[in-house]
Image (tube, rainbow, N blue to C red; front, side, top):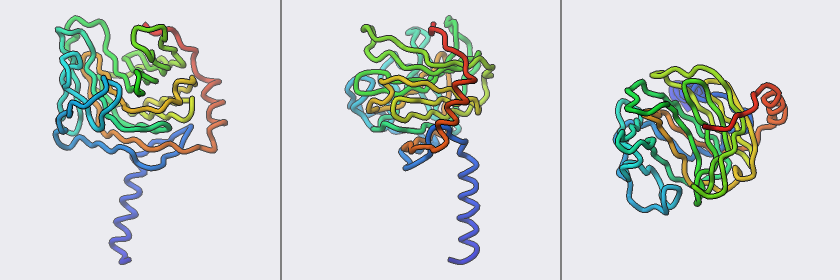
Length: 248
């Protein structure tokens, strides 16, 4: 290979590595998802077994309840329908189990339109319902095992939380690691971990939930491989992180 093409490849690899924040529980394997939101997304094809599964690619603007979404300036923005009082939701369907989900998210400083809170969730689903989530607000973030039967006896189980200011109108980096029955959620370099049997289920989509209005950009997902440093990393996280409170 000639010197100039070789140097170009090396510079490209260095640039790509600079976009990859460190992981604690897993290492990155095969790329599963790459979404830069450089152009409008294809419309949802309407083939879905409910909201949770049965589709590939994006499911958005499929129901009034899920708000309105649009791609603009390299990001994907969801806005609640004020008349419905339900967060804006959009999902990307693909089969996965052990995964690293990476993106940048922003809670937008828009009028509350009667809502009490702003929030932003990165959530996984299985064929039945929700599996686990990283949930952000202006006061910090938490991770949880989700309610997996919607109005049934199963309830969400908070796993860990961190109080820290998360500014509106600023991009925050999220890394969401899942392997087996464990998860690690990292926001702006701060990490939380927890475990629950449901987390190891086969999953079918990643859902973004925007309370009032929020945006996502630079979405990536990889198959998650073992990290030999995990036991040491986990011990440090568990020693440092706060006990969770029951979500409101």
